[in-house]
Image (cartoon, rainbow, N blue to C red; front, side, top):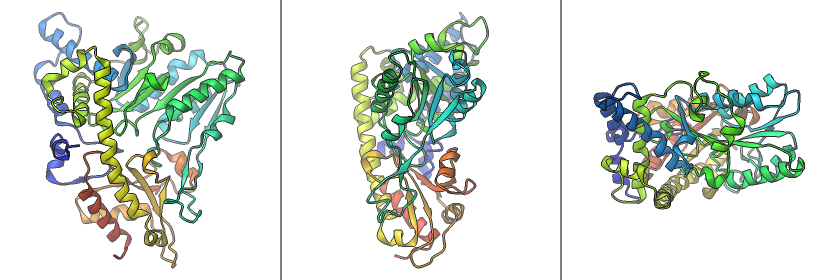
Length: 455
């Protein structure tokens, strides 16, 4: 990967500030910024009009779902909807599903102990229909790096064998996270979905009806979403964490929309997309996200980032070539990010850091994690006091030039499960492919000072 080319695509990186809160929101690609400005300056009219600028505006906005369909390997742009945030999309989905849910304990929902976006809507739906929401909770893992002597209570992960007993003939929907925004662990969604479908089919005598919805927000910046390969019904992510503006997208499988979703929109709107999409998303944002696809393709493939090629890429019927290009780019992203993870995890799990009380939250296997790294500082081996996460972050911030965060990051249930205070949570350093090893070294230096570590 050409790191100089990559960083040149993000104007915010020019001043040298180290952005290490990318799981909360990545920086915006300059092609996206230019597209927003150009739309507002040249085609800022209502969609659907017959005059020339109206036609151009409608065409431009249609590029957003077309590009997103290619990015996630959806069958059609008609399977893509948008909203201001993933939380709204998930709530809309729960409302649209409600009319197919059997009441009074006949249906059950399962969710992971993760970001509230893919938990809260199902808990509320279970409450409205008088059904149960079951939790697939994480469990302690034996990880040589994050759990050196077996005493790290925060070295946890999700084991499929703990999900299987929760599945039954009543299981109507399973809400998964493709990547934890605190643990940083990737999930094998394809395999998990296969197990869910086969188990419910067997336990229901072939009569069960289970659907799978996947939160890809913490996954999408690092790995390619492939909804068809995964065989999921619904999947969503936030473009503002994938180098775009503040807008979120959801894949809704056509067959699932037809059989499961009612309308939550105006009575005269009948097409599947707009029955679930309340109002029109920001036109300039929907158009601008079409620039994310060619940027991502350009990371591993030369000559694909030029804005003049966007229309050609989106209108291409050669899905295989586009998929191949995206695979190459995401492989390059994974390689770059693994070097960042290795450097930071290596520091955090050194024996002297362990003795000081630093505990990584989650596992440290480079093959199974994103560069979203959380940790806490407990009492040290020699009696050094535990430190609040907010004090560590404040210590880094006081040094200037670096942005990291503390908190529960909307995964308050996971923080509670870990026995950590919700108001303090964890320290999280979240990196992406445009970060560098030099930046990681600067973060390590700042953490040493903030925690009071000696070289």
